[in-house]
Length: 314
Ligand SMILES: NC(=O)c1ccc[n+]([C@@H]2O[C@H](COP(=O)([O-])OP(=O)(O)OC[C@H]3O[C@@H](n4cnc5c(N)ncnc54)[C@H](OP(=O)(O)O)[C@@H]3O)[C@@H](O)[C@H]2O)c1
Image 1 (spheres, protein in one colour):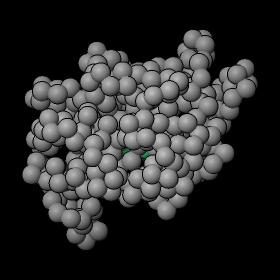
Image 2 (tube, protein in one colour; image 1 turned 180 degrees about the vertical axis):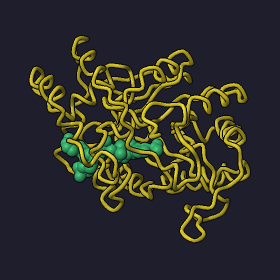
Image 3 (cartoon, protein in one colour; image 1 turned 30 degrees about the vertical axis):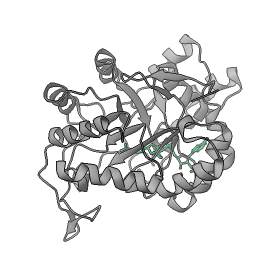
């Protein structure tokens, strides 16, 4: 990451991860241009996933940008149809192929929940997802082998509950480098965050703008997090907008944030969300927590996610 001067953290592997990253879920056909724009703006951390269908677009943008591969922190994720331990390496190889690279900086288990094995990303019967029977501990052990082979520099998880994470830590040998989870000022998860600190697990905040993602049906009836008067007001002091303040809050806590945008002006502006907030402002934002979780596919995935975490609808 030669010459990168923005905020970074060190993972438990010793590698560095930029705190401001770029999300690529949705608007699949616009992602090659969006990622090109993000690299031009200075981002060096890109988040994709097999299921987003955006790995090819990311590869195209990286090639077009002429930014050396070694200067980019690249994350992708293992999808739920490939949880069987015998399928994990093949899935990783496919992602490497789409991304036209020979290694990943980070490979995450996207969800703890398996789907039925096979080529279909969303295997269904009568419109219902067919679940699988692989245990996420076995899936993770297969991911550990990818580190040994050099295909993957670090492994981690996404969307685990505390009990699921505790079991993983007990029964496997590589502590996840990163846990990617929904986290923003309306879902601050202070206790869960502290637990990660004690284990040396870096947190990446997804949906850092909370209810701005329009696929989230929950949260459309309240005003947008990025318009929250406290964020907007704090922003005035620094010449920043509410979105930038939301990002700076995560960064102040040493976490990565991965805002998504297909809009060039927003892509540029969000990169400037990596700025230093004063401690009193961080504290004010800490107290905005409403325990509001917008992403919970439990009913469609056939798995009760987040059962012991804040924001679980009762
Ligand atoms: N691990 C997981 O299960 C998981 C789940 C969800 C997300 N993620 C990752 O996290 C990334 C980010 O999360 P997300 O996509 O859910 O939501 P997000 O980044 O919080 O919000 C994206 C939405 O905000 C809009 N936006 C972006 N910048 C803005 C700005 N400065 N002002 C106003 N609106 C702005 C975007 O619109 P435009 O694009 O139209 O500009 C888009 O509609 C994803 O892309 C993905 O990489 C991971």
